[in-house]
Length: 355
Ligand code: MET
Ligand SMILES: [Zn+2]
Ligand SMILES: [Zn+2]
Image 1: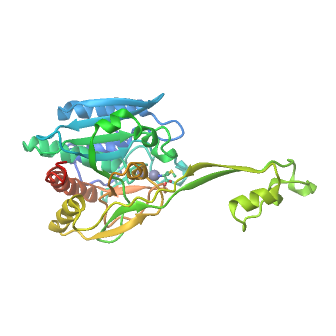
Image 2: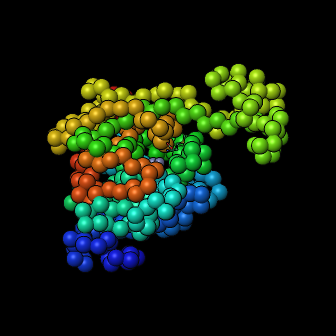
Image 3: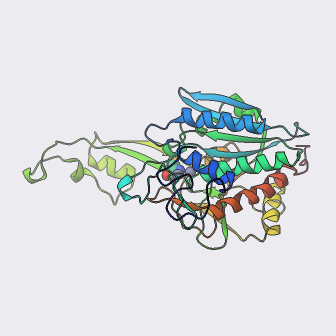
């Protein structure tokens, strides 16, 4: 672990003396320090980190290069009945850029303040979840557990830039088919109340590039045929491009039409395993449609069920925001949540059809 400027346990006035921090928190902070930040994420650092983790867990890691320089890493814990469909724990390794001048701590130093709040880009989106999966698996393995279904931890690049060179390509890869997926967990959002939010569908993103050529020049010069004057925002996309002139074109960088939802009926065996485990832990769940887009959309488009869930209650929603942080107690509680959820999902009895 790299020491940060305030010593081994972060910001001033920290309650932990050296060496007393929970090792899961230390690992989380170490992962936050990797600069997997766009526009040039250090994916090599993430892969090296994950290779070390796989070695510690004594589990195999497979690397699938879906595009040049874009590797999906898969750590697999084979179940006692490997013919059954598997459980996927998915997370993306990239994070969005920062405006460092708006942060009270270095966004890549993983400073922990006197309240136990850990500041860092990716602390909520979604390096917390990556480490929570890993630590839950580590504890379950150490306790000598094994489950009937195979568990795959998938670590995917480029989610934050639309997933073209990440999950979108991976779901079409033969190695994805080989995973024989029955159910997937992926990211969700924090919830400021005591409840946890779960996402069973998403909004359809449309990212559109409108090409509207015009003469350049200073605004005071009464330039004719400017780009701005050609655009009619109140009209529909097609209509306003047509009206703007024959040379105005548009392209979709993202155009999702699929509306596959994941069942949250109690009769659904996957949802039942998920929700009954949460209930047994006295967790309140709030079911929602994700307000933006995650890699779950590509999984659902393959017809597979996926639930978006990041176990962060009592936490303001700070994804992509300045001063993104997560409290270490909330983080540690999340590991315990996965320690219960993973066994429940990986022990779902064979479904009709023997899967
Ligand atoms: C449409 S790609 C989604 C990128 C990112 N997850 C976001 O919601 O902003
Ligand atoms: Zn995310
Ligand atoms: Zn994000």
